[in-house]
Amino acid sequence: MAEKQTDDAFVEFERVQKSYDGETLVVKDLNLSVPRGEFLTMLGPSGSGKTTCLMMLAGFETATHGDIRLGGTSINNIPPHKRGIGMVFQNYALFPHMTIAENLSFPLEVRKIGKADREKKVKRALEMVEMGDFGGRRPAQLSGGQQQRVALARALVFEPELVLMDEPLGALDKQLREKMQFEITDLAHNLGITTVYVTHDQTEALTMSDRVAVFDDGRIQQIAPPDALYEEPENSFVAQFIGENNTMLGTIKEIKDSVALVELDGGAVIDAKPINVSDVGARTRVSIRPERVEVDKNRLQPGAHTIKAEVLEFIYMGDIFRTRLRVGDNDDFIVKTRNAPDQRRMQPGEQIEIGWLPEDCRALDA
Ligand SMILES: Nc1ncnc2c1ncn2[C@@H]1O[C@H](COP(=O)(O)OP(=O)(O)OP(=O)(O)O)[C@@H](O)[C@H]1O
Ligand SMILES: [Mg+2]
Image (spheres, rainbow, N blue to C red):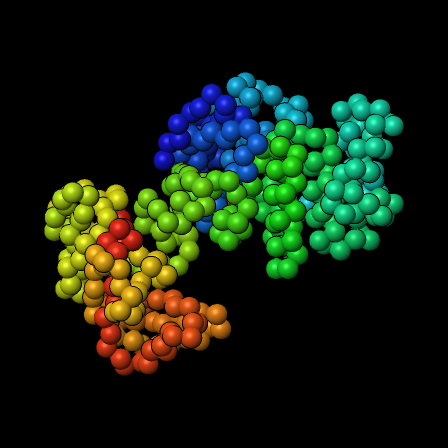
């Protein structure tokens, strides 16, 4: 999806293409504009072109076509070290022969900052990531998570306007990862840093970002704030890549007043919201989130559409119940219900009727 260029764009990709071998494009006609101070995440499957985009922005790869601008100035001919960009990569290579403090001091020396100033900045950066007591150690004397925090401090120590991070938390355990997610976004927002962050972990993307760009096959499939991405996916790829989703195949029978009539392959005819389908007779994949399905007839909202279902499996998960149903020809239809005092546990074999609001059911490309 093309993103409109705005005046306050800080990072801009305009019609950028990249090919490594002169034949296949791994980045295809990419338009992106990131305003100052935004935390933008590139999310997508392996090989979709995320790192390539970051490398072009950093200056380690050149675009085959198109223009990349930073603060309105084309950076195609500016070498990496002159772009003023802080970077944290998955293999956060700290210099092993230097102490932590020397590691942090290095980018300042390169920028010809005086000794007294360097010491002050290094101290502050280490305190920021709660590593103030570790300046005298060498990287090998730190845990993985501590090294990761030092790498973060090193990327921020020269107060860059832009920080690029490529899967910086990939090597950490879940608990530390969650703590660092919070620390990184907090730091970025407090320091007013523009961040381009790469991950293939969708929870990480949703919880950390102002906006998420979903990549697939060298293109941005959708770029939106987390809630819009989750609730209003614009195509089947995004609907299935972000969060859990129930989908059913069918054929468009009619489109009228922003409502699509869909005949499901299982036989039922339902209403759905037409998103990226246009023609009568076209195949469509309708998509509905598990938590938007009501299984209690008495709680159906006015206007809800109902359909028959058979209970196949009941899974107790503590705070919620996950129930697997057969709906039409989909026998992997999931509903989630809260473990509330009045919530019934459904039994396999039960025939029930479920419902949802037509606007929660999106007719997407098949
Ligand atoms: N230096 C290179 N030379 C040739 N092809 C490359 C090079 N780097 C990446 N590619 C190819 O470009 C495509 C995009 O790779 P890229 O590293 O940008 O993907 P990614 O989205 O970062 O994936 P991952 O999530 O696995 O890190 C892939 O098909 C990859 O094989
Ligand atoms: Mg990558």
